[in-house]
Length: 363
Length: 121
Image 1 (cartoon, rainbow over the protein chains, first blue to last red):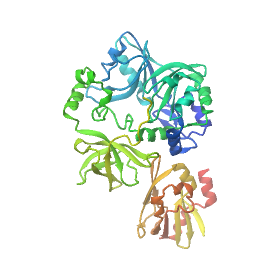
Image 2 (tube, chains in turn cyan, purple):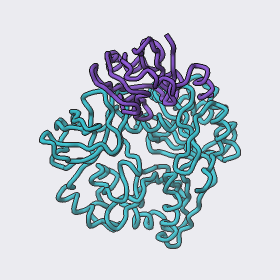
Image 3 (spheres, helix red, strand yellow):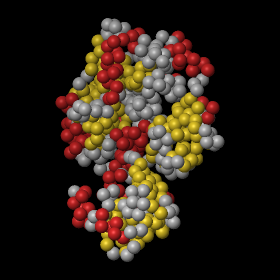
Image 4 (cartoon, each protein chain N blue to C red):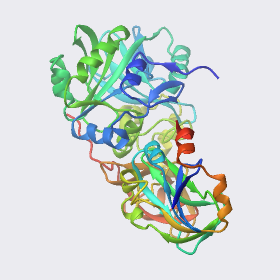
């Protein structure tokens, strides 16, 4: 067992009252004084700052980065304009998802953000499969500022941030440091992820926190926010066994890629696109107040198990329990009535169309 | 009346062989915002360490374990409609059960207030 790593903001988290836990090998705050629900609402109503420095940041340099990336991920990169970002995933030969990530075309190179727990796997995977491409892991901090007040807060120091639209990315000056600001996130709200030189992240975070509308938020709120927004968590809702078609991520595979294939697992993915998958990731709304958490079985009204919950909890903005899970395709239609088997009891629930809380992006 | 505390962070306000049971302020703070409470019913009997309810917060589900044996004479069903009261007044209005103790001598295994304060310090 190796010691968990610390992000450059560790001492500041402790100073600000963050309750620190080991998450994916990193000491990260679950919540601060506002509590999970308070931080969640702060993000939906004003703005919240998350430390996401545990995620992996990678640059890809070389002549044909976009073409090479298309051999390991099923999205279109050769047509991704400079300054634009795209959600994608690495697929395995069986059509499952090895990790999900964001790829930005930075002009002269590509910039990627991968999950904390998968960074070593992903970097090894890219080095092994992207011939002639230089895979550079960055030693930089990453923070997310999310919520309706995010634009005002960030653009006060970096005016260029206001000109970005959802899924656009640029390099600009923020409090005297050269930062990459991308208008995207993992909460369903408008906002930014900002890559900052490690030696400047503490003082820049302190500067940003002077804004009345901004509070720190931890992993607890990050999870309930993304769950309400219907966004997948790698390791819960998607993994090496789930295909992008089952996970409702077909939108991330552009038409040319869906039709032409040429990525690992194309056989299964194209078959499921044609015939439909046998199971689907859906939103599941419990009718009572009991949250249905990961692992809870889903049954039809005759008591037959038809699936299970992949992520679930309480949605502070939704005001009730929220879940998502995989169920047999014939039960995936929104409005279908099912039962959740919680502590030996059948609790009624309804299949719904995700998300639980409408996404609020600046398109 | 004397108040006893368990290592599972429950309090018991005891009057003869009856008691009121709830979770401590310390437990409520550690749980975070409580969003769901599931209770047993009046008439249910239980042994020491039996599960006698579920408290779910925004963070996780936690079982409530009986600190001693007894019978539930009344369940505070207002908690099911207003789980947030567990955070607001855990050692007052947000009690969980009125119980009849099976064996008053079991109280000797519990802590008094000063011992509990030392336990959570």
